[in-house]
Image 1 (cartoon, rainbow, N blue to C red):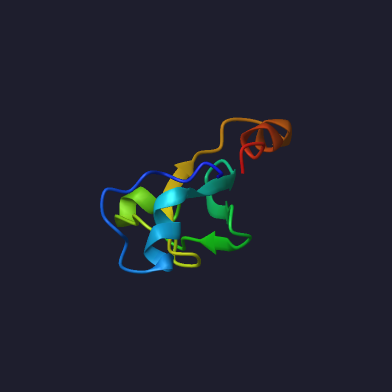
Image 2: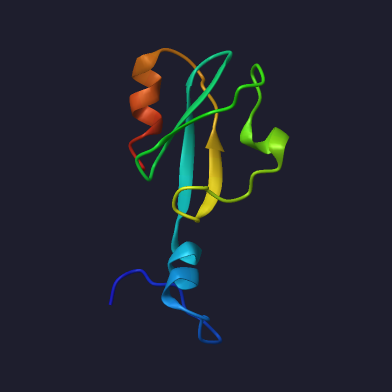
Length: 87
């Protein structure tokens, strides 16, 4: 029944279980700009130069609560589409 991870003990609630299933990807929009688009459909901007979520010890998405996975800008906009295919 789906790709649900097997649990050895029941989760506290459904919300904590859902956070275990997937990560929220934060994709950097452009090089040298700390603007990220999240896979949960939000944008997040870090005001201090070219900082990253890791620089602020951000472990979870502040919008959906899932574990945060940071994807850095690597090239032109075509590459941006390629990085979003797994979202």
